[in-house]
Length: 115
Image (cartoon, rainbow, N blue to C red; front, side, top):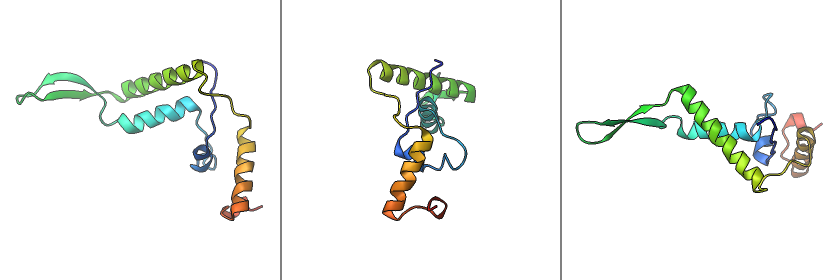
């Protein structure tokens, strides 16, 4: 997939990412969320122990990352085919300015946004 799917939600703009120099594309956000959620428990069956309980070998980090991003790719591809995702109508810069404007109106803007 060479097409970037950009989806700016309010949490994208408020999670500190822009201030820290990054903003994740939709597939990356999904991939990171999957890694965060399932990274410590994703495993491959390796039989049973003496008590009959399933024994799992944890996936290697490379296997985990590959699997999570394959899932993210498939999810975004399916959402696109169903028309559930659309391209944003504003750029990231426009969204940041709009977000700052709203924060100023609410009186909750941090000092660096009050300019």
